[in-house]
Length: 262
Image 1 (cartoon, rainbow, N blue to C red):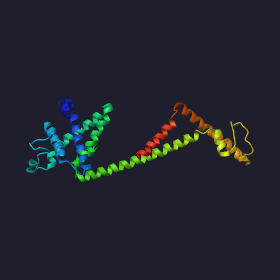
Image 2 (tube, rainbow, N blue to C red):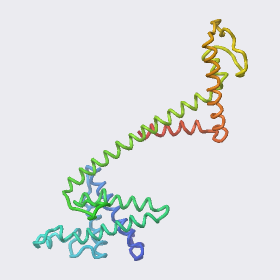
Image 3 (cartoon, rainbow, N blue to C red):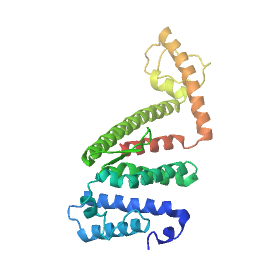
């Protein structure tokens, strides 16, 4: 059974809580994305989470699932004061998970993701905002307010992500065009632009191009200048090609991937 192996190992109690959090998250996703919901399935998950939390002493009472609402209703104590110790324990646990993730090697990404899921998905729906900075680790607020803040934050993050991708795409497309231009030999460049054939820089420039059009003195100076510039660029292209034979194809693939993600 899920959690049994972890629950029998006191050292791995943290994993039990992470798995429970994952179950709650998946239940919330099921509620949001399914118009036709199976109440029995949700109840089964709620009963199971309640039973596991009761084993750990988080929940008291004989209710089938959830906290003892009758006991809370009959008390004059603020419900927030009742759940405060549990929230404190949960927030402290999350801090420990975040700290462990810094030294967890390859697993730290999963630990941080679980920690952030608790902060961003689970607790806001319960009216609890967890903060990583500041004097207090959490505060109570209306769930709708917290969920709206979460939506706005995600929208801002998505906007930032797309802006970064657009910038990266523009940079890579510029690089690709630069390398494609650099792949042309000086001889090919001069023939394409000026319609004359030159095999070397020292070769005399003809007085007219292949169509019979005369080449002015300024045109001849431009030809020499462009030959020198293209020779430098083409040399860099050849050096890059020698160490990375498929670098053009790799750059094209990166550009295609960025366009797909955008």
